[in-house]
Image (tube, rainbow over all chains, first blue to last red; front, side, top):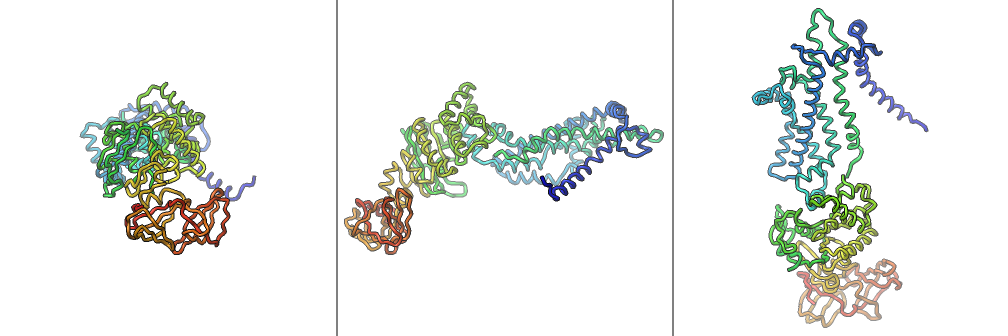
Length: 283
Length: 350
């Protein structure tokens, strides 16, 4: 088989792209397997060292924070709960509100849709003080509910679901009606299975969004019990070593590598559906 | 009391369009009724009102002795076959058929039995595990019908179900629908714009135009005895020839010929209708046709030509007769098979 020049070029570009993405991650990983002294003396490493188990073990189990009570493992659990809660609720609420907007022709459905859509212009960072005020008045600071709830409304996902539902032919609804399906059954038996690839895609986006939240948990939580991974990245392994001790660079690299794992896992597990949704339309 | 009664049913859309005007009709149990008419005539709206997919603005619909105006479509016990089949794309054929039964709370064993019976009847048993996207057009059509049959509804509604099929398959499915309906014996209403489908399927036929039933009757009644110019032009293929003329004292003058003793007291401008198949060649006939075009269908020839001021006048003769372009034919109307319509409103006057 003859390989065309253009194909070779395309592959070179692709390989360069992959390297650009992978090299920093590899550098972090390789560095996380050395001890701190080596890194401070010699800079980041390409080769693997012999401190892998020690570093990772320390990261996961050492108690940190001001009160020396929170471990990285706990932070991972917190982040996971937060991201999972945000992604799940966002998908459910968006799918249902899009369903209401498309299939129930109530008064002002269009203005309401645009109202929802406009909230895209008002991200959390803009409304962070009012949001904090509300959550704190409700007594939800330092709780998972407080971490998740203000972030679950999503204009983006509502918009995507709305556009998708609009492509579903009316006959399907009519046929389902004649087959005795009520509105709830139609949603569960038709829209949910038909949009499952869409749901998977939205779930991935929203999980990563929830996982990478920084400002909101930072403001929301005063108790270290509710710290999340992304917050921890700024705080952990710096606190008690100012002045005398060396910064614990190796451990922090290990922490970075660990912090990447949950979103990567979500993508890996859901990408089968995700890609299926992109290449094959079931209609 | 008839099985299905429509009493002065009217549909006005919110934007003021009147789709169906005070329509009344009765459909008997087990009857195959066909609504035929051009697109946009309101025939589908009428069907959808029976199904419950459109609200009834005025009038009443009774099904099996029950007023169904306000009954939810899911409780009317009607089944509908849609133009694009509307199969559930994410369910396999078995579940497509079973879905309506599941919603009615029928036990698993009964569902299985019923689905298998329907599948056998429609010869789709071997596709039961397939998704609709893996089926051909004809197979999808069968599944759509299976979905209707399996529920054993009071009435079948067909909304132009054959228009997505190719010509050959359409004829085959048409035959199968008719056979199936006779076998199952369920009252059916079939909407189509194709007059051949309408003629072949119907026990009775309703020709609908502009939201009004122009004529209701058996296909042959309507073919032989159209009440208006619209019906006459719509039913019959190739279309009836229409010639302008004048009727005075039972004598009709048109395009260079006269017909005496017309059985009508009407005086004034009229339209004369003659079906292409109701004429034959003679030595000295009424109509002189100069041939422009010959369509050879094998069994028949369709001859198109000019008589005086009228172009594209059609005459149908057996395929064995060889007629050349440019020749002159002399034609007579068989057995006084002609129709006279009032020019002003299209109503039949003879």
